[in-house]
Image (tube, rainbow, N blue to C red; front, top):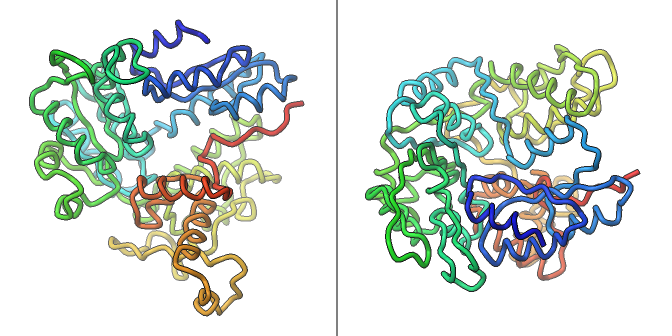
Length: 436
C-alpha cells in the first residue's frame, strides 16, 4: 500500500483526488483512508486491456477508472466529475446578474457570506467567484460538502486530528480549516451539519482557532468562511436543528441564488456552454442549438436547476445526429414541464411541490386506489427509490424533492441496501462498461 500517499493526505487536507494504479492494493488503501477518517475520492488507472482489474478497482472503492495511456479530454472529464461541479459563471439574466453584482460588492471584505438557494443552482460557483475577487484570491479555496461526509468523519475533516486521537489515527492529519489558512473555506450545505458539531464550529469562527481531535493546544487559523444551504435556516433554527448564534455568525452577508426557472435568459446561454463542453469532452461535433430545442428548454420547469440542465445537455450531445441539437435530442421529463407557458412564467417562491412518482405497476388514473393493501413502509420505500432513480442517483437532489434531510435519506438507503434491495449508485460511482 502506498505509504507516501497516505503521508501526503495527512499533511494536505486540500487534496481533492487520488490517482492510483491498479497494481496497488486499492481496497487496502480505501480501508486505511476510512480508518484515519480521510474522505477523498480515488481514481484507479491502468491498461484498458485489463477489464477485470478495472472492475475490481471500482468494487474496491475507486470512484472512476482511467485507461492508460491517458487521453487529456478524458482526464479533464474525470477531474470535473470528481469535483462535482463546473466552476464557470455564466450570467445573462437580470435577476442572476443582480445576485452576482451583490457578491462582487462584498467579495473584497472579510465578512462571512451565507449563500442560499435550491440544490443545483450554482451556489459553489458563486462562492468561487467571491474568492477569485477577494483579497485572499492568492490563497487556497477549500470546499467541504457537509452533506456528503458521514457524521463520524466530518469533525476530523474540519479540524484534523493528532496521532492516537482514535482507533486508526496513526499520524497527525491536517483538517480543512488549516488547509484553507490564508484563503477561503466553503462549508457547502451547512444545514446538514449535526448540531453538536455546530457548537465547535461556532467557537472556531469566534476565536479564530481550532482544536484538532486529540490535540493538547489550540491552533490559530486565518480563513474566510463562505457557507451554503438549500434550506431555510430561520425555520431550521426555530425547529432546533440549527444554532441561532451560528446562523447570525454566518449571516453577515446573505446572497440568494434564484432557481433556474426564474432566470430564463440564463437557460440558452448555459445550454450552449454545456453543449460545447460535452461535445469537446466526447470528441463529437460542436452543434448549435436549434430554435425548437431552445423553446423546449424554456418550457421546462428545471426542478433540478443548473445541474439538471447540464445532465440534459450531456445527453443531448450524445443523442443528436443532425447539424443542430433539436428538441428531439433533448430528453426532458414531461412531468417536470409546466402546462402553461415558458419557464419565464413560473411563479416566484413558494414553488409548487414536485409531483410524487407513482408506485410500480400503478395503472393510470388509479394511483391512489392502487396504494390500498400496501404498508406505509412499502409506499415510502417505492417513493424514495423511484425519486432517486429519477435524479440519476443524486442524493442531494432526491432529498430536496422528497423534502427530507440528506442524512435521513442516507439512513433509509443504508437500510434498503442491508435488506438486499438495489439502490441507484451516486453519480460517478457506477461500474464501468467492459473495456475493449
